Structures are given as structure tokens and as C-alpha cells.
Image (cartoon, rainbow, N blue to C red; front, side, top):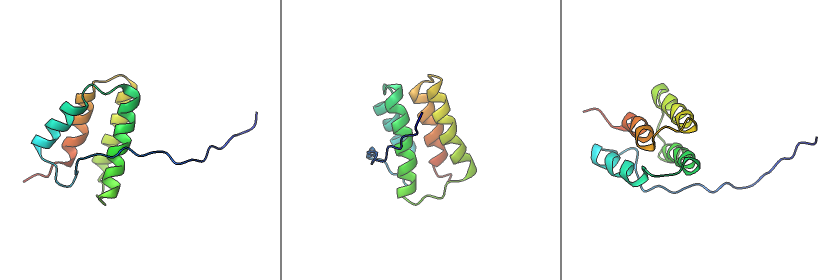
Length: 96
């Protein structure tokens, strides 16, 4: 069976959230906005959050990277979207 390479541009979802300036109110509203997102779209949303972190030039620490990996795995196991997003986004809130 031959290997087929599909080279194409994958459309990146645009998000109206700033991970650098994230606060609890914004986390809560973002979770409410996306809590009913279907599983296939939820994985795209997690990828978009990762891309957003790269666009904002955020140096992700080990814990944040593991959170992205865990979020993707949990969505594969049909975890609730609001739980996954809260776990992921809380890693970006600055401690004062």
C-alpha cells in the first residue's frame, strides 16, 4: 500500500482570548462560551489555545505543556469540556 502525503494548510481557529492577560472572570466566561462544544471541535479548540500561546510568545513551562497533553487525552475519553478548559486555563493565571 503506497504512502500518501497530504500537504495542505490547516485552518487555525482564531480565539478572542489573551493568555498573557488572563484573569478568573475571563476564564469563567471562556468556559461558559465553550462548554457545549462537540468533541471534534474541542480538540481543535485545544490546538487553537496552544497556537495562541505560541503567537503570544509565551514560554510554556513543563506543567503547562503537560496540561495541553492531558487536555487532549481527556477529550478523547469524553471528559466534560468545562473541566478540561478550567484545568488548562488555570495554569495561565498569574499568581499575585
